Length: 466
Image (cartoon, rainbow, N blue to C red; front, side, top):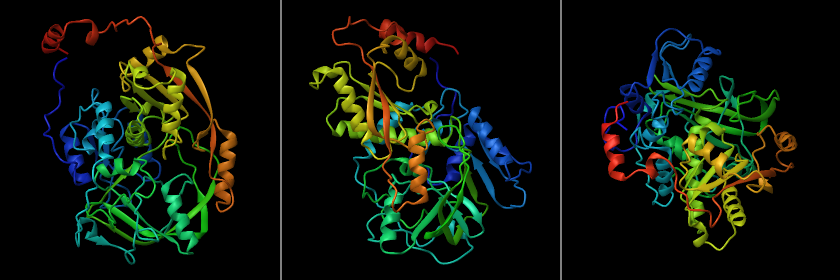
């Protein structure tokens, strides 16, 4: 088809600040400046939630009641308002063109797992130090000094000097917390708001245990706001309720560790990036899905499995993982189709960070994983009602998923008594085999890309008028 109606952007390095990123989004028409006064009590959240659900531009609030000088940016990495580039914001955080398709973003991120780490440039000062409100700076390393963990987390404000939040048992932050518990000292933390946009992908990527994710980086110099302190080993406070990645809000209020704040630093006129989590599509689905897919893809390749691509479609609310394989997969590995699918699923689910996925779909790579029409077509033409569904028991499960009530109960016990309750949650998942049978009549797809000569395709594309 004709050229996409967006300004041409040069290939570039990832954005060095949130402000630089927003300026480019604004040039693309994907930012809505909201200058009327808004309230932090529900109103800002409601506007952001509506933006999530309606493919709205990024709302930037500059007049916030009782908070002069502060700004809020909503849904910065949700789906874009650009109708033919919904993944534009995710692509741009990595320095890619906004029209880069999701499959290519996953492939590029997967390759980064094999690149040598780039040490950070340490500077004595930075914009984030323009305002220092409280306390002393703290060290952000493990007790043994070997690892800094970056992750995306949520925290709830209790009062001026305290927050509370989840430290999930299956995440690296919990393992580090337990290291501090063993030596009887509170865990230091740094809550970074508005760092370089690429850091979101780094924080969401389920890297292996023991990898230092920041090169002992104290804090990003270009961050907008940083809150520092320690997580108490003994104090707990009620947290929630909050909209979850699956689109529901639990009425249960659970006590979780208290974060004790010792310092707050921020830039002049800081920007606070905010999501209003819940029903699809928001950052819970876009950031985590792309980063986890990249890690799954590279891990499957490391295990010698013939795979082409991977995706966790944002519309499936982080519960469906899709993996494509070459049509001749059976010539590359001596397994039956069922065993091949089981091998893929078991390997994918062994990766830290894949607990959310309760269904794993394996299909031929002529199916475009980010194309909903392709996926629905595959369901109708390649999913056999009697033989394409494979049950797998004892698989890692995220206890927040609502249709596992027995696992949710286990999780509540863990939160109430984390030192003694089990933190390994497992249950039944489903593998979906969308593979054409070996020996099937080699029919070609009756579509534009496969059913017309390439020179004719090129002519049609060049002459096409939207």
